[in-house]
Length: 455
Image 1 (cartoon, rainbow, N blue to C red):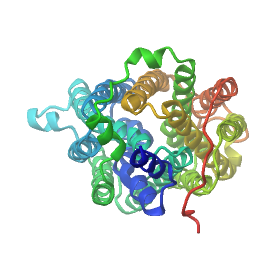
Image 2 (cartoon, rainbow, N blue to C red):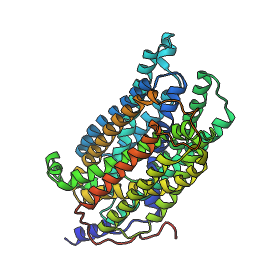
Image 3 (tube, helix red, strand yellow):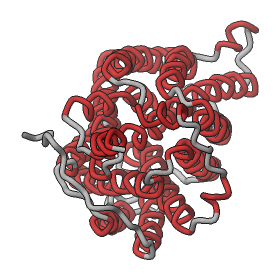
């Protein structure tokens, strides 16, 4: 009994700085490839000649594959454990397949045809393979949080650190893209493919280095190993489905991902086509967003978290996004420099809703460790499917958007890009705030981080 009490005490003790750091960098490969996926995939595919509807099909195929894999990966991880095995296997699949998503149509080269249908099929297949690996890595990494520690504050800190390195990954991508777009010129579809091929290769190398450090520095979570040794019964799906909080957290997470993913996917279209900013703004505006998100994510790690603070910070982030959405809808072309200011507030809002949204998942799981992977997998499934459908619908209507070149620079024409970047995320953020305010989150007494990351 004494030994059990000591073990429980050690598991509720706040984590140290190194443990948090090693965990936080484990999703870097996923994050840097995801940033490239959502920011540049639609732009890349339309630049090489695919129609917006065909580009939407490619993205939807990846999102569907991702969503389905999260369910199976979550179930298998709950049954057999081995988070790190899943993480490493998924990372290898991501690294091998991602270069083919942006590296040109491989089936087209093998068959010797460049038909639109063959290109769509070729890119869709590799998009699906890439997302299978991505999903396995994501579910194993996210569900690992609850099995590393029982301390609720440390769980939120792990999520915050992970989000901070998501920002580092995104910044790395935009730095790479900024350099490539300025050095490698693109005047033909082949030159465009060459640009994005270099971005993909460098991104894989950067993310792969961090995965190696994660694999060396992070141990297989002790709580999951103990659960298998002691033969704890796996929690059934119905246990979660009967919880009102599960559905509330799922809805908030889905809305949060819609905010970040849809806005990221249409940001480049908005700054280039609607605001007619320079081509380098495709990298500079997102970079500002992620710098601000990174700073806020680091600061959030120093907070002693309670359920009320989770709800309060999410509400603040959601309302801030609503204001940003209004600004995006009304911003005229002759005032496009204000987009840099809006980017600062978008970055702050993204960090607030992402860190607290993932923190709510940890509160939901609590000590029910034998079902944690299913929770993260099922929530990711809903996120991927809804985001995939939303992006498919929005991109399918992209070709019906009229040209803006003849419009007055002081006129804020309500294009599809404005609705996708401003209206859709703002509405989703507002709905997320409403659901969050209705939650009954209960968290235990929390202990602050043992070693503040800013100390």
